[in-house]
Image 1 (cartoon, rainbow, N blue to C red):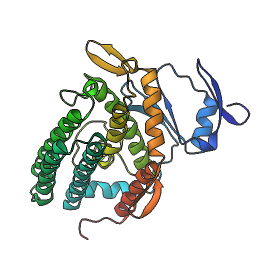
Image 2 (image 1 turned 30 degrees about the vertical axis):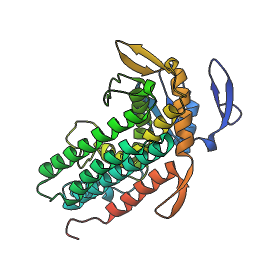
Image 3 (image 1 turned 180 degrees about the vertical axis):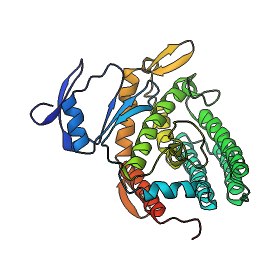
Image 4 (image 1 turned 60 degrees about the vertical axis):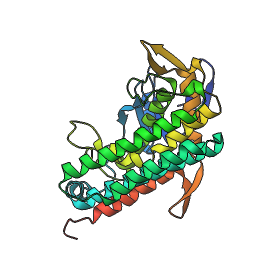
Length: 314
């Protein structure tokens, strides 16, 4: 802190940033932060995230206040075991499939290739129909079916994206950790950023991210984030695809070790700026005009409001 503002210094430049303009502080390897900055951030509800090499948060500094009344977290347990919880997951997966179709439509228009897109959309729509019509048995059987349909959508979706991209960005298959190509490396990092934002949104409204529904029984993992994030993944997909279509992504964005791709400082600078700009664009969702980032927080708040009064007997 200097002169009542955050003071940020790196090899290239020094910057003064008013703390009122900062929503989150993400700390990567070899970053130092002062006690005074942490104190100011806590006082003004600014999240501080420690980020690993893949872009995922490994820890956070936050106030000792949880964010809301404990009723929400008590009702989460009942919600996770209810048929209402299954239908909530069903709705998220249907949104995910429709969002995948939207991304393929956009790529098809930009790259003037509607033949591959038409076939892929038909297959994804078939999986969406199966998710919509899947009978609720017990939780494990229903979610096993959901995962199968979700996996089918994902394979078609990413195969089609690869075929649409310029040749130098095409990839054999989706690879997560580690990534085996530049596209998947960029996408993994963008997902990590989005994951941190979703986790923060849930915590701020008092929802316990460790009580999952379809994703569960993973020790010390915030599994509800894995459920919640699915409705927003297409935003990360779009930004990475757009950078590739514009041929902005270059080989000097990556460090390659044993055929594993890692985003370096050059790549991080471009991707983080592009994704943050996209998330701060104002768009209309559910009749409300907000930034995409604020929509994440709004949907988290709607979920918390629902959970306050949830009862499996209603």
